Length: 470
Image (cartoon, rainbow, N blue to C red; front, top):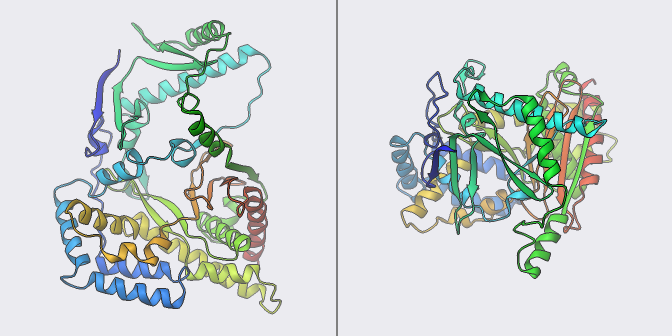
């Protein structure tokens, strides 16, 4: 039996979905940046993406937008008012539009996958034992979270929001027309196991508490035995209209993944030359994209906002004037550019990325603020300001390179697809002595290649670490 099942409306903050209270220290609200500061950061992010005439037109539009008593200023005041009466001014909108209201298939387009380290099984019993140990570990972890014994995580001396841990298990999105529903339970007594297209409900709690590992092994063996004959697949895609299904089938095949372990060095060597490992890898991606396509990527890196109540993410606009200056000299055949000059440009690019990232992490990014102003206009029935139809906005939010650092101690990595047809997705696990990287693109785009991107990225990482020692 499931208890505390919550069918959550889209306008309810995530913190209200679970009854668990996991934060031992209070957290501040996510701030709303100063409008003029957002405008300046926005314009700076556009310089490497627009030509001079485009930039000048956008600059004029932005300055008009933020003038006192103009539309941007009025929307900003309304946003500030919303923040006063909400624990987080963006979370309900973001949950709706970025997740529950997102209509593209969640596999590839939204939900990431995680690959664990390779394991060799010598016999079928090893597989059953491993499965039981995995289930038991998840159950123990779930108990640990819900016991309230987990220490509050910190970023330096700043406490981080622990509430998302309460949502890891017992949560799913139920398909619904227009906007999905978020379903959550804080307590459950069973799990679902799929074997050979058969679905089994396995109880994991008895009168003594959680079932033992040995009991799980026997149950899994029984499930495998009872599902030895393959059932008819009930997947929603295969049950669809055949013409629609063939389109979806081809889409699933249009994903091109290239995963590799870069074992020449890891975070230890990058720290030795006193540079930020994340910024180092991000700049390497930009050089890679520039070398492949001869233009800057519109680059999105995910920043977590866990230092604020019920907060989610911000966009790090990783492409900068400095990063493209460095990319140009790295792909140039100009022999007159010295290694020292290249190193200088590399350090400037990495430091600029770190500055942009640090601003985003403390809630001083560009995209969520502009998004909030846009949502205020839409909710109040106000005509969408020209800024959101301008080439600067449309071009700088069409992300041709999306990236995330997802660290694991084990040899594991996360992977996901691009967000635009001609884009790349790049997720990485930087470890002390190696970097695990997953690159993706769509096969349907003839201009992109995950394999080429991966090979050039290896080369760029190698060349950059050599520059660091100059």
